[in-house]
Length: 421
Image (tube, rainbow, N blue to C red; front, top):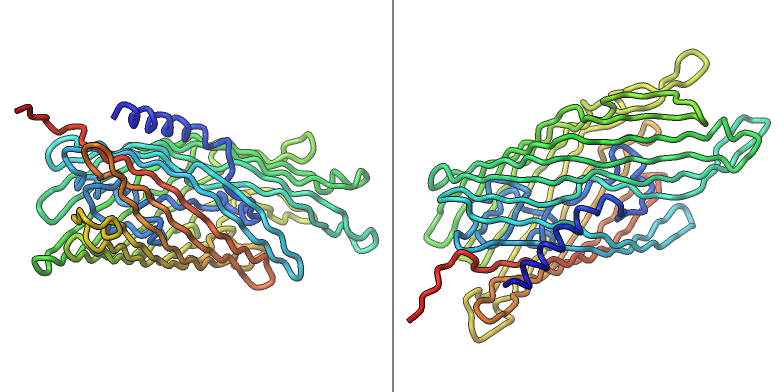
């Protein structure tokens, strides 16, 4: 047990430094707050992130804080994960393959008191990482000028959460997170003559908070079948962020609260059969369309920066997934204790590109939950999942990403009373 505590603590501390890393090379991360991260844990990843109605006592499910009240009273759960991916970028007849690896998250959960569970950890929120060259027309007589686009940073959250089982069928919960991160974006020109016409830098620092509320309702249909409904609401607000846009050595725009989070809503439906089968369906909506974001505005004969409400758009997503284990109590067959998972999803973009919708995302996933044996129980699980995601829009770059997620759930009986005969 002591070794597992050390491993879990090391993983948690390592995740605190994740803001210095980038898990993407997508040019689409230059828009908005970057590529929005998957905030699900290992059990849900094989189901393509389904979890709003997921309620189990042996996993951490931060997608809905109401689920914490289901945590087993005898255990302390740690869940850590990392990922690796290969992305193929296609634009016209040009193709490029890029590899990335990232530490995904470190979370934990335990029973605080009867009917109340707690959770804590570090999760990603968004990711920025791109570096590419292109050309831009200066005017008709001078032609095109080469420019280089670079960006790095993103947002991360360290959170604590509580879930309370109000009565047999209803649970409620909340996550409160400290949200932090940096944004560094730059445009530089390869032309020494017209460098000032194109060179710009965009920097921002964020230190704020994030609050997510959740509820779950569970209703028995038969002795073996349960219906579950989960809802979540994320509170939108202005971020404590210092945003600056510089042109050469001079600052052309600055704002103390230049970033904003949207109101977010989630609805999940779930069905469980005995302890063998879970089927879930999640719907999400993020109200980015009402959020202000820095952008250029035409004033007379020149362009200036200002906060605008027409840069971002509302984002909608749907995910469906299934988890099946043939016989979780089997002692003779290891294969019968393995969880088999499948999922699929679709999401719309939350930003515009040159006045048109950004790329939509289609994804599918599959995975396994492999029980691990030790001297006194086999409740810990190795979660392995693979996901393929396609991001595309007309006349824009198409991305095909193949991602492998590896997660380890430590689920040990810390609070059991030992009896000596």
